[in-house]
Structure formats: C-alpha cells, structure tokens
Amino acid sequence: MPKEGRDRRRHRSADPDPAPKPLLARILDTPNLARAVPQLQPELLHRLIDQCGLEDCAELVALATPAQLSAVFDLDLWSSRQPGEEERFDADRFGVWLEVLLESGAPFAAGKLAAIDPGLVVTALAEHIRVFDAAAITPMFEDGQEIPVSAIQRDEDSREVGGYVLVPKIAGAWDAIIDVLTALDEEHPGCFHRLMSGCRALSNSKPEADGFYDLMSDDEQARFDLALGRERRREQQGFVTPAQARAFLEAARELRADAPQAPPVSPVAAAYFRDIEGGAEADEPRESVPILEPIDPASDSDSASQAQTAEAVAAVVGVLLDAGVLPERTRGLLPPAAEEASRLGHVQRLMQFVREHDDAACSRRDQELAFLANILVAGCAVQARAFTPREASDAVAAVCNLGLENWPAHWRDQPSLPDDLLVDQSLATVFQVGWAVLHRDVCLFVAEDLVATLAEFRTSDRDLQAGLDELCMTMTRCRQAGQPWRARGALEALAMLDLATWAALVALTDECPVMLANVGGAGGARPRAISTSAFEFISENRHVQSVRAFMRRLPEMLFPSRTPLE
Image (cartoon, rainbow, N blue to C red; front, side, top):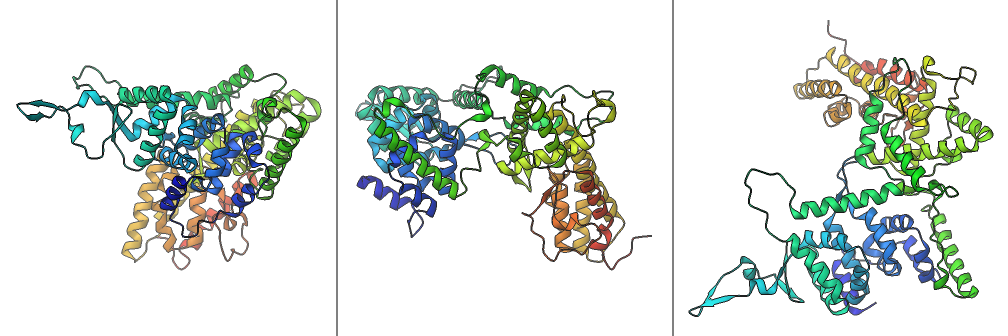
C-alpha cells in the first residue's frame, strides 16, 4: 500500500488497535484472493463490507471490479432514517468511499471513478463541491484597484484543478476529492472534463423566484434522475421500493373480509410479477440468482488458472459459510424456497401440495414468498427497526398462515379442496387477509383495550397520572388514525408500573405485532425475565386468543393493589 494511503488511514482511524476483525482477517488470508473477489455477487460483497466496516475493507474494495462497485453503490449509498421511509442519497457515505479508494493511491482511485456511471459521480460530487471555470472569476482591475467579480475568489478554501475552481460545500471529504480529481485530470483528462462540466452545470445559482413556476432546481433534478435510475435497476433485480411496500401494506390493513368476493391481486404485486415475467429468461427464474459471478473465460485462459480461481472462490465461500454471512442474504436475494421460508402448518401443507401436483404453481409460490418478504423489509418495521431477511421470511410465513386460517368461506372457489389449501389463490391476497387480521384483532384491539383499562384506574402519583393521561390521549388519536405504533413514546409511562408488561404492549401495538414470552403463556407463571429480542410472530388464531387473554390480565399486572373506579 502506498505511503499516502497508510498515512491517510492512520489519520482517519479512531481505533487505537487497527487490527482487522476476525472475519476480515480470514478473508484477507485466503490464497489467490484477487481471483475470488471479482467473482462475488455485489450483494454478497456489500454484506461483507457492511459486517466488517467499509473503512477496514480497503483491500477488498481495491480488488472489486467497476461493475461490482457500481452495484454496491446502489445498495450502500442510499439510506433512510426509519424503516419504510424513502431512501435518500448519502453524500457523506460517498466521501468515505473516496477515502477508502485512496488507500490504494490517487491514480488507482481515479481509475475506478472513471469507470463508474458519470451521472452518479457528478451528482455525488455536486453534493460536496461547487465548480466554476477559472476564467469566469479572474480578478479584474481598474485604476490599480481590484474589482470583485465574485465572492468565490475570497474563499480561502477554494482550489484550482485543471482549469476549474472548486469550492467546498461540506468539508468532510474535501481533501480526498481534491486528491482524486487531481489524479483524474492527469490520468483520465476526458473523464475529468466531463465530470467537471456536469458539476459546473449544477453549481449555477437558483433562478429568481417569480411566482409563476414551481420547478426543481438543477441539483434537485439530478438527484431525482439518479434515484429514478437506481429504482429501475433494482426493480429489474426483484427489489420493492418503500413507497410500493407501504402502499401494499396499507391496502392490506383495510381489506374487508365481509366483501362478497376475494379482492383482485394487489396492483403492486401484479406489476411486480409482470416485470418478472417480462424480464426473466424462461430457463432462469429470478429467484435463482447465484452468489457468484460467472468466471470470465478471457481472464483465465488456461485450465490451471481456472482451477486456481475456483479454489480461491471455494475458500472465500467456506469462510463466509463458517461466519454465517452467506445464509443471511440481502434484500434482493431473500430465500424463497418453501423449506426455508415456510415452516408453519397451513403454508407448509400448501407448498407441499403444489410441489406434488404442479411444478409451475410451486415456482410461482416461491416467487410470491420472496416478494412478500421484500415488502416487509422495504416498507415495515419490527420492534421499531428494519427486518432482517430471515425475520422477513418468518413473518411472511406466519402472516400467510394466519390468512389461510381466516380465509372467508364465501371466497373459496374450490370447496372440494382441504380446508386450509387455496391452490389457485395468490399468496399476496392470502397475506393481505392475515395482515388485516393482525392489524384489526391484535394491534387495534390492544390499543383500544389499553385505553379502556387505563380509564378505569387512577393513581395518587401526579406525575405518573399525567403520563397515563397523555398516553390515553395519544393512543386514542393514533388508534383512530389506524397507527397505534406512533404512540410508542407515550407508552413509556407504563414502564414505571411494570416493565415486562410495557415491553409486551409495545410489541403488540407495533407495525408488525409480535408476542413476547409473557404473552404466549395464558394463565401460567410469568417469566422472570423478558427479552425484547426474543419474540414470536403471530401465526395462528390461538395466538390471537393468547393476546386477548393477556389483555384480560392487564389490570392486575399494571395495578395489582388497586380497584377500578366506581
């Protein structure tokens, strides 16, 4: 590694012991690593970087191909503040990537940048810098006195690179940007001027507001175009946008079981599968995406080289399997197989039935399970955080199982089938039935019953009573809006009464209600300790009955020594 990169890394690292993490150390010790890394799917490479930390993965990043980096950027440079919110481009994260690329030297980083989509690079750089032609701000003099033609020339931090004046907008990655652009000007001048021209166009001041239009500025339009391009690429890979996921889940909550017939397939689901059928090859369904890229014959011209590459890839995969990285796939590669995603009674029987009777229907069910898991990851939260891929698969199986148990009898098209098998019905609709039951009979029921319980009791502690009154008002308002989980903060007033009961109520009024250990056992001894991370998805009607039994015990748990108000 060049001295420049080593010095930069020592300056950035806040860890007094820069030793690599165990997983990363094992990966870096793999023989012929340079042959293995370019064969990894971008999703797997991103997960590895996410687990080990981007700042520590400079060696891995240096071995990645530009195509891999572009795909990883789609995953890594976008984030949302909360699960289900729209993801926004993270300019600061792009600055970290530049610094990591510089670990291998400025010319190397410039070469990687030159091979990446210029639209992404321009939009990202424009978040950090403003670019102007040097000639446009050349000082002018009159009678020996300088005439200020721009405020830019008075900026002490501005730098001139390749005939352009660069002015920082945010200071985080300023030095890294200057180093990379200087090398880009020297090594790839054509690319440099294209990027600078793009940044210069986005550096113009906003047009004067005249009240006759409400258009996006140039930089806002660039961000919109960048997000739209990413969205289209991800749709082709089987991802679901947060907006689509939220729309699907909200429509599911409002599904009516007393309707005369089953509703049509959700427009979101229909569009998703239409894209799959239109874009996937007949002999290669989308869910069978490999974890490795196909080996390029041009890069390994002889059998010995191919054997070395295969051995290197096998070694890396072995390390990832041992570390538990490989089974936990990222959002675009959620495991759709029935054996892994459907471990519950009715769903398991349905999958077994279609597998034995109709291979095409089984493949369709696998795709539907993957779609629904992606819906939960993109548009919902569990315990106020994002789903993991495994949790999403488990939740889908649970909700579908609940939907099969509660499928309205008058919607059944084939009464001759077993009671819990709906072979011709879309699992997306089955999921919506279960999701509506979960929302109505658990989330809304618990919220309403909690308010009714609190209204019957008073406490002499004025501060506590004020907190309970605020909880009642907040929960009533959120219950009427159909979103009890938005009262999560107000529920903290119950922690003073009984910590375990508070945790259980928070879990039951969540976007995806789950049961903690003190809810599942009706009438039994209360657990001595409750872990909020150890929960069970509600998958059967008996679980719903356990929730109702828990709510009947709520007064004695919250107010064990008090009697209701007369």
